[in-house]
Length: 154
Image (spheres, one colour):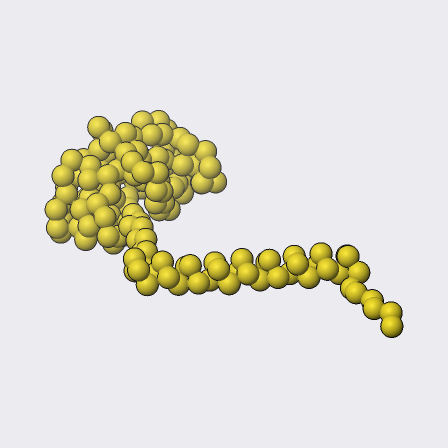
């Protein structure tokens, strides 16, 4: 009687399949075990969310924004930009030191808008602003979040 075994190539392939299956089963078992021992790991990222409820811009450069913090964390305003009608070209910049932030509802301190608060943000852009033209005002927080509103200069 002649005995024939499986070829070496098929044997190697079978060993690889068995090893991969064992690794997958071990991974599934370990992740289930770790979750049961330590509980599910929860990551909660609090994002900054502002809603610009009203905006005005005068031909002299003065602007007023009514901004509500609808996020779960306080937001500190670092810069306010005036953008051309294309939304790309920066015409003027106002830094936090030149802004006035007044609480209308809730609380605010310096340039920080507390969660749930409505504030009046005002300042003055330097440069030429044409009455009747459309501009964009962009608020940037100290963490880099951006909030933009379209406004027509009066």
